[in-house]
Amino acid sequence: MSTLKTGKVKTTTISDELDTESTAVTNVINGSAKAWCDYDRTNSSINASFNVSSVTDNGAGRWVVTYLTPMPSANYSYAVTNLAYQYSMPSIISKSSTQIDVRIANQFSGTTSLQNTTSNSVVVFSN
Image (cartoon, rainbow, N blue to C red; front, side, top):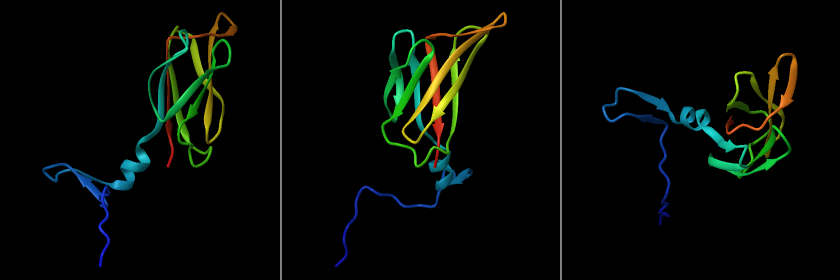
């Protein structure tokens, strides 16, 4: 007697309806963002997110994104951007399998100061 399994589709490739374009399923799984967040630092609010449990305010221009489901390791790729002033420089202070620590600095006229900005985005890619 066989056991009926539900809720799974197993395949090695995905293609369009005309079968003119296809890709390996592993490309889709490994190439997709594993977490992302758009964060309004001036109001301390998450505008939209995926696989993000919280964002913690760590002072002016500093915030930590915590993942709902951790990454397999801290060896992942990320992108961070912000919508702010011409001289804004987003960067990462540290990262772990459970969170990423973001900093937004403003460098103008030879001085650097941390700043809060309205639209900040972090995207994480991992396998």
